[in-house]
Length: 136
Image (cartoon, rainbow, N blue to C red):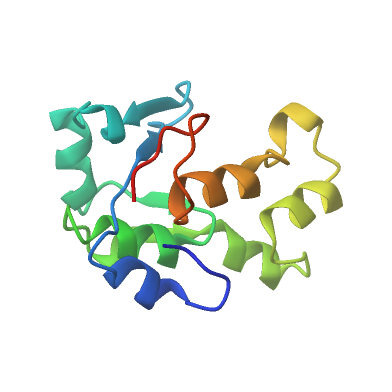
């Protein structure tokens, strides 16, 4: 379950926490998305890279990504760089959507506006209905 009041540690330490999707890219290659929820597995190259000290991992809000990933794959924090921290250092706002706007990014490069709704749909308990086919 995710909540704006829970915080990273409570969220990731929940017994029902799981990573549903894993998106990544090496260097300037196109982004690849692995659906762990559908049983796909991370490629061995990626699993190896997560713990390789010669490969720097970069993410927006890297502490969140690092903490969540380390529940399943070990990756020392020293190998991570946070683009949110770099943006804050330069005076940009912290939110991914806000920094996209501040940088004047085109819509296809910004955070999806539907992202928050998708997180709520997939990560918060709800009543089962015929439409969502959920079982609680």
